[in-house]
Length: 342
View (tube, rainbow, N blue to C red):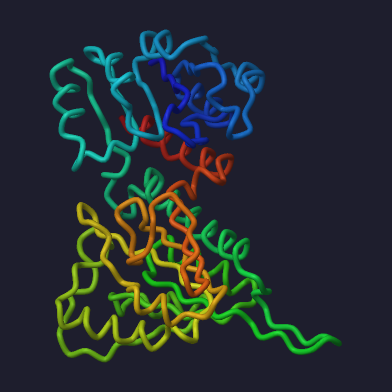
């Protein structure tokens, strides 16, 4: 089969679906690899590197879509790309199928097979294809780097000749893949880290990374995790207790990382305007749920804002893309395993 990766056209997207090293592995499976010229430049992969790996470089997206039996992408195709759909072709990409009915209907009409990478089940035997987890891992790590870039102090505490510097206090809301990556990164930098999740079964994972699990004493059974390991929606009573807990933490916390998302739902609001107002000037909120509306009431998707009381809220939606080389390497490996199992 001919496997082709076009250049991503989504504004600000720097990832690429195939790297020179993953192309070598796919060729060992018997596939021919094709890439559009310049597709890997933003991720640090030159056309020459692809050519050295035996990848054919084509000059245009149209030529690539026409030549490829399997087209692999990062972002779902825009309308200008959808016109390239053809019979018996397979597209593998993040597709957001729940909100992309028009794209699915067009693919069905043109006879194009589509595989949505976000629909890979979170089960043990599919871990090698779990691109959502790969990208969430990067997002959680990068969230702490972005927080450090915006925070005016060290993460670790220090005692110097000039005086004592207290460690930063970090709260991570949601201990899925992104949350655990953020916890591990923050603790490694010396911060005091607290974390909350509606699934009490993740307490051991949080504590194993050196963070404190904020336990919420509540009699109502929240159901823990739904199928696939995601948190289930909370009852109104549980949510009230949860917000009360966060409100008490707000004045003591320097950095908040929010990661709470439930598939096919808008991001739940977990950090209210009142909580932001209680935070100290210079505190930082990194909202990893910004693309789905945000966990913080004041988040503006894809923007960095400073509130009237001096709290910095970062709502960037491209965290994995900000580490394009690493993200492309992991994503292309997920794609390669997917193709191997077709």
